[in-house]
Picture 1 (tube, rainbow, N blue to C red):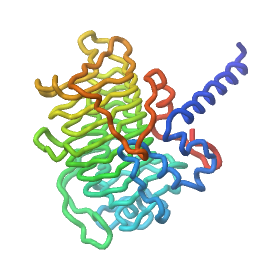
Picture 2: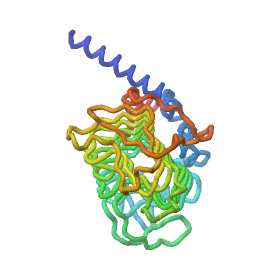
Picture 3: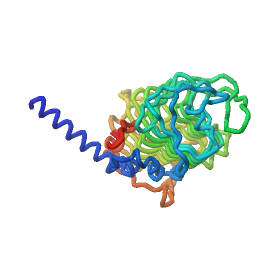
Picture 4: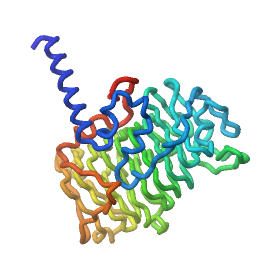
Length: 372
């Protein structure tokens, strides 16, 4: 085949793959086919699925444009990201250009905010990262988050109209969600942070983590604060259409107490395990694709942090296993998520996962064109 013919074939193949991704992935199907997305950004708020689908972010509020990558933790300047997320109003936050933001201190949000990077390449890293505490109605879409570091105690502005407050040390998570609800984390790329890439704890609930790409990290995703923190029994989280790997060790996710629906995710070979937990969580693993590592003693998808875990309700439904991977189910019952009509989505068979997750992570978006 001549070089020109090969390139033409490759273009057709990629186009068909992208079209298939948009057709099968219910979130992408909702908005990515529209080349005029830039004129209708808030359409995204109608596209969530799972337990976090009620998160509308700043939908219906004003647009706020980040024009500067600068950061002042105590008295943020207009045009910076921190200024936007600390306003009391509902805001849909966009970016004027590509930028790399190194935060002085952890970025605390107020409620009713959307981060929407479409059209810009935005990085947060090499410093403090994102913390959601006691908030609701948050959408985080399209960030590159990497190399997050623990922060020192210090003062920051938590919300406009208040005085800066002293906060304690943060562990260096990419995104930490605590005592919050109605949160949707979608199409982000997260790599190599000091603690977790995404942690959801302290009775947070109604959270969807979707279409993200996680790589080169040890402890990826913690859902639940501690074995003794029983308030996390209220936690309901959907983890769907994500790509896990390469270079990940464990916690994809690690669950405690609550209910977690892990659906249509793509797992590259892990270091220790893929899905684990303690303190009697309910886990439904459905339609995922698991590729085991080559080590013969490390093929099991699951890990239980308590000998009583053999009675916990963990179910594998229509998962696909390669290279000897296997899921150890337990408990009696189907572990159904019991979504309401606004949360529900069709989980497809594991072999379709490469198409569903082909464009997991940040997207390349240009006005008047579909996001690729």
